[in-house]
Each structure stands twice: as structure tokens, then as C-alpha cells.
Image 1 (cartoon, helix red, strand yellow):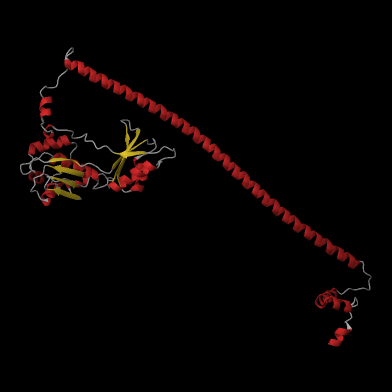
Image 2 (cartoon, one colour):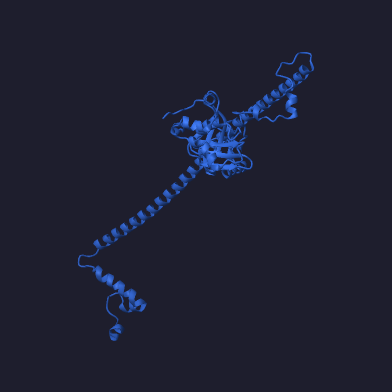
Length: 379
């Protein structure tokens, strides 16, 4: 068993030219090690793995269409429109889709050269105004609340520094529409800095295959424009004059764009400076408010403490008065004659009887402890 891995589409094209474009011969010639074409963290069967296949024979069945891509692994989505001669197929990984595209694009199938390109991603969004602290992972986490995210990428320059721009590719269009609407109506903040993400639909451009000569329609305008070969305009000619005017217009556009970029850059710096100053002022205000809350809390605690101390002082005063009263009673008892032995229990019982009998009983009893005659008769 031979395994074949490719580094570029050019290598595949040269290999394909050598062995011929017969897909059956391709299937017999090699077997792909499918696992080696998928990164460990790569999500499978995403829209980035979806291929558009055009110029298909009208009598091609869905089963034959699927067999054409069988050696590139399992297909998750297979659709064919026989009347219009096109179809879609979704493979497991982007690399496998690239290999299938490089190998099969342009092969003759039932006397018709098929055309293969990557399908347009209808659920992709462009995100601008990103903070330098935003990464691929944070971007995916932030937009996952709108729906399943297939891929999130922060664009960097050749030195690996973030450009403030990124792309988010959702698994379906409703999620992308929800994210677009929510971010347009509100302000999605990805970091501490109040710098909202600017979200807009991604402009779908084909910067890989471009426009091939074989795909361009040969209209009368095409033939008219192709009458002259590529050349440099000669000074003093009609071509040179209008070429110079075109270049002058382009230079004016470039200068105006640069001026607009400078104005935007200055406005951005001014806004960032104002934002930092306002942020500092806001922090000071929050600190002052927090200090006021703390002071108010301290005053409240101090009041509670004073109230508690006042209660304790009142209790201590009552205890002190009770202690003094008892000491006074003890002093009075000590000052009684030696022959007088007060019976405290009898005195307490007499007080209780006086409370039960009321004023009349108290009068009849007198101060000697003798039972009233009326009460004796009653008994």
C-alpha cells in the first residue's frame, strides 16, 4: 500500500499530468492516508470543506457523483442538480477538500471537463476593532453564544502581530444573522476596554483560483480588448496621455485614502486618550463612592457600638442600684435590737396575703398580723 501526501497544488497538478486525468486510474494508483490530513484540533465536515462542482453531465447519478470523491474519505453532504449540471459535496477536512479539488478540477467526465472550486461560505462574518489581547480562542468563545462556531481566526501581520481584524465562521446562517443583528443593535465587548467589536458580513472573494482563460466568456468585448498584446505606452501617444491621467487619478485616490486613514488614526488615538482619562476618572469616582460607603458603614457600626455601650451602662447602673439597696437593707437589719429577730418569710407571706385580699383585707389585718374577725366568722 502506497501513501501519498502533497505539499502544494502544483505538485498534485504535475503528478496528475503525468498519470492522466482518468479518475478510475487515480483510485487504483494510490490510497490516501486520511488521518494524516487532519489536524488534531481541526473540526470536521465544516463549510470550509464544502466543494462546488460544476459542468457535470446531466445523466450523472448521485451515487456516481459520490464515488468520484470516494477515495478522499467519507462525505457528509452530497447534493446534485442534474438539470443545471452542478453539485455540492462536503469532505471531512479542508486538506482533503484541497487535494480533491487539485486532482479532479478539469478532468473530463463523460466528455465534459468538470469545474471544482470551494463553495461560498454563507455564514462567515468579519470582525473589526479588536483589541490586541483578543486571540482565536477568545474570539470563538465570545461568538459561541450566538450558535456553533466552526472557525474563529484573528488576522496577524507577517510578524505575527494582531491587525485588529478577524473572521468568525458559523455552522449555519441563522447563527451568523443573530450575531450580526445583536452586534449591530448593541455593543459586544471582548475585553476590559470598552472597545466594541464591529461585525459585518464577509466579502466572499476567490483569491486562489482567480479567473482562468478557459472560464472567460469570449464576447465581442473580449475579442476587441484582446486585439492588442500587453505593452508599455509610448510617450507622446494617445495611449500614454490617458494612461498618465489614469495614473494621476489613482495617485489622487491613494493620497486621499492615506489622508482619510491618518484622520481616522488621529481620531482613534484621541478617542483612546479620552477613554483612558474617563476610565481613570471613573475609577476615582468609584473609589470615592466606595470610601463614602465605608465611612457610612463605620458610622453605622459606631452608632451600634454606642447603643450597645449605653445598654450595658444602664444594666450596670441597675445592678449597682440593686447592690446598694441590698447593702442598705443589710445595714438596717444589723442596726435592729438584739432581741428582735425578724422573720423575713412571715413578712413575705403577709405581703402576699395583703395583695390577695385587697385594701379591705389589709385594713382588717392591721399591722400586727392578726386575722380579721370578719374573716374568722366567714370561716
